[in-house]
Length: 469
Length: 140
Image (cartoon, rainbow over all chains, first blue to last red; front, side, top):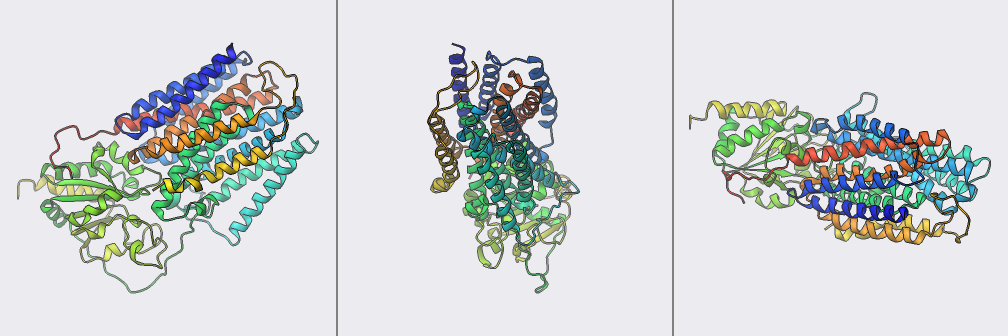
């Protein structure tokens, strides 16, 4: 009887989770999705808790309270820190899966060796490997995104990197096979932590060769791993709700990873096997090209004459927290009857959809946030393209220069606009270490400075000079 | 455009399912404690569930608005914290203290994800507003 009720609750929870994701297809219905997700999760928790075999309620209550205490502040981070928060919660998710797998293994070794069938052993090993790998990998990713001092920001590479990783993987698999064949041998409980250690190490090694520009893909992949770890836990515990919810999460991570890969012109297998594109250093030297810079006054005058302005935001906008100033500029331009659109590249920022959230935070209507593929045909009609802290995603070398590391990557055609203003913090090349041809184009004028200050100055020009023309 | 990559996407899923399927062994009957999992499980229903829900996931996620990819990640974070189910079963079971302690730690970690995942998703989604006021500039 109780079994039936619990299963019914699980089925209902699965349905609610699917609806939650379905409603995310439109910003208008998306908040219904959250309600549906919360309802599904509450059902799952209550149904599990109410089972007759579950006791020790004080423990459960304390763990839940601790989770709420830590979880609430984590939901209140500034939106620029959302990539770190997401990575951190992948770490928590992987860790939970790994720990449950570990607990189940040691429980069964001592109290029910007959439970350790080959099938369960394979599932446990998959669960702990994916879980712990996601744990350390995500912690590293979060550290890089947070710019923690002792984690190198630049990609770390060394000779035979892939060979080392493969060898470690091979050792882990070999130990896994041995454990699967002899799960209860006297040496097995001693060898089990070795697999855990290897998975933890593997997670670190997987992330250190990755630079900030590849973070959107990596975060998406870690998302998928966390989901697959939950699936493996479902196989271990014979629980279909874990499998369905984990599979939803896994496919979400995979799809986002594919979209990110496409947006960077990387193959999917390239990413899957951890060979994340190591950024080649572009050849130094070459002829010294000259930037043309523009004053705020001049830029404001050109902007005022425009009828279509396209703003291309990038990670630099997030770093400078310039989104609110951008909003002020947007208002000033709109007030003058100028059409303003935002061109969003899929990998702009440090996680999928990063720019959209920042601009939405600044109250810019999402109807003015336009995807790359939709805005590109309009770029030749664009009077002024304002590049705010974006670099590689507007670099025309991706279309023309076969030697460029980013060759083939789809870009926003900022160079097709009649006038281009690019805001840049310094004269150094961008993240990938590549010179951006856009900055040397005849029609490009640079505005050097912190994005927030530069936009602030432009707004000031409009505010003070509003009656002059 | 993503659709053409279905096969590559499914490859890892298929590999995982196959490896588990290969590892299947004959069902043995055994007495088991009430409330505990069966000693031998028929794994095929589990694999069915996995494959079908992966397809549903792929279909549903592909239609998610690109505007909402960041909230999508945080809501799937919260949903994948379904590991809470496993954690509760381990914490609340009649097991030795060190096992239950591990369960409690996992329960704490999943609960953190559930709470922060849903809260931040909601917070972000509240910010997405369409251009309700009569727009000053025309639409393209």
